[in-house]
Length: 162
Image (cartoon, rainbow, N blue to C red; front, side, top):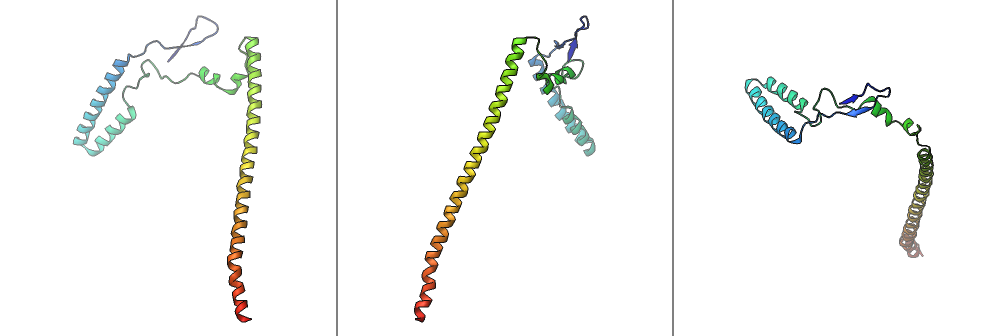
């Protein structure tokens, strides 16, 4: 959960401070598991449909999941998601030297990526050409060997006639 400081004009999300200790999380998960197993057993004893419903509800609920302690869901805020969008890289940080460094680095990385992709393309083409040349050489050897083995068979009938 996030809380927003409303005393300033620029609200900034701050992490929630009411977290459950790990020991309590483990204990509550174990106790919920025991309760869930017993509830399913008793529900199946009473009715097959009731047992299935209880098992589905308890499985869907999942117990006390760590990090879900608080007044609301811990889903990321809209501000957090918006900061991860591609437009976030184009916004300035307020520090001109850092912004210049970041833009130079991004340009250099884009150029390196383009050169690397071109290199991979040439490498794949060379590999394909090499494999194709090997295939043609094997085929030529096979045809040559086939001609050598079939040629005496063709000559023998001619020699018998003559």
